[in-house]
Image: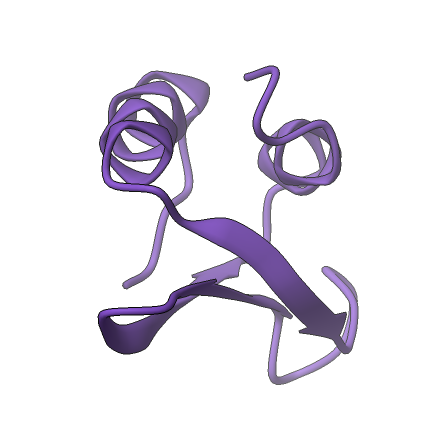
Length: 67
């Protein structure tokens, strides 16, 4: 999922948190062609990936689950 606004990240972070996801790892950066990637895992379902080129969203992801 690509997220470029703090509002959209806040909504998605609330969903991730309420469904028991935790951040597993991150890779690349907002200034790379790939963007910043973060993976979230929950033991009962497949992981999800978030991609962003936004510095503010990247910083908020690093603060997850505090949102």
